[in-house]
Image (cartoon, rainbow, N blue to C red):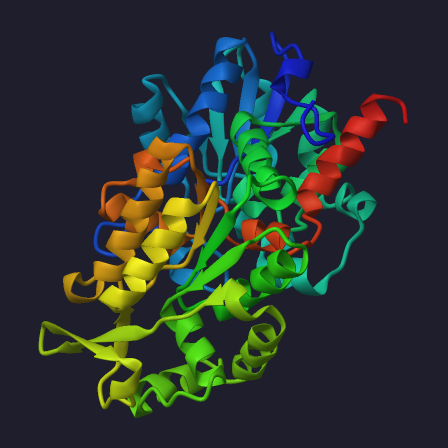
Amino acid sequence: MQAGILTLDDFEFQDKTVLLRVDINSPIDRASGGLADDNRLRKSLPTLRELAGAGARTAVLAHQGDTEDYRSLVSLAPHARRLAELLGRPVAFVPDICGPTAIERIRALQSGELLLLENVRYLTEEVSTFVNFVKLTPEEMAATWLVRSLAPLADLFVCEAIAAAHRSAPSLVGLAAALPAAGGRLFVDELAALTRIKESPAQPCVFVLGGSRIADAFSMMEQVLGQGTAHRVLTGGLTGEVMLLALGHRLGEPTEQLIRDKGLWPFVERARALLQTYGERILYPTDLAVDEAGRRVELALGDLPSDRLLVDVGAATVERYVEEIGQAATIFVNGPAGVYEREVSAVGTRRLWTAVADAGSSGGYSVIGGGDSVAAARRFGVDGRMGYVCTSGGGMVRFLSGQVLPVVEALQRSARRQRGE
């Protein structure tokens, strides 16, 4: 048992029917309709192999896209084909979720077989609108159509969808309420890595926070600085630029307009409060870079405001941040320092990510999470040298911000039921 959650080690699987919830939600290539990235599929492979090898009859549930990005709300047939290629064994697919065809196929499963059901977000019960506005208790979720239809067919529910652990949906919380439940290998490992960062990081602990999702950065900053988890927070991207606005620096109309357009100006006051409270524990850029027709030009704070959009941190900032990273025993990374997709503005992120990867050789432990952060690490070829690479984004942020994750809570409740508590 890990963090109050039962694991695969607590169950026998031979000839047991298992409902396995994974998170293989992936970028879609608009031109071909295929998968543009299979990282999350690869992360699910160990648990799939283990269940199949142990003789389980495994029906796999997953989602792809949502109503917030309707074009990515597509069939999981390509996912089944790619999983079969990666596993080197058949992965059957049925274009049904919990109707008669799916039920018949699950009942017909043989020992060691894998069956991927259709995209659960084709069901109203599973889309964000339902989850956000129809507030169901776990017991009420156990009475939804999805759970009523599938739970009677199964002996066990295994949740591998750590990236969706912040969502209170029937295929996550409802199945855990209806069946004996365990966390899969990825779920347990990632939760352990995040718990280590949150509760017992070796000090000094440095958080590197950037990107454009300022709400995430601020919610984590307020928690980890207030709790003493982070010795230092190194800010970059729009997060760092908002810090500079809070200090009274003018950035220039293009950058300030971008911050207004994204609705981020209210964070300036929050940044000011954080800087007043935590002072030297928050580091911010002392120089920045702009793109001059494909040429990188770096500007000191005294050179601001700029009539060009700020796209990266500058060399002096990088050197100062690299020094902090090199002295840290624990490093958490979420959010690039600049526009990492373009070479002219990728310098800061490349240098910082490389420093984080290098920290492992001197005993530092690093955790990196968030879609852009992980994509940047892969782009720069350092993802394999990070201590732990998270698949979760929103769940990771909420966990490190001190919020309870509904799926973790549901698995813990299931464990208590199994123990008769």
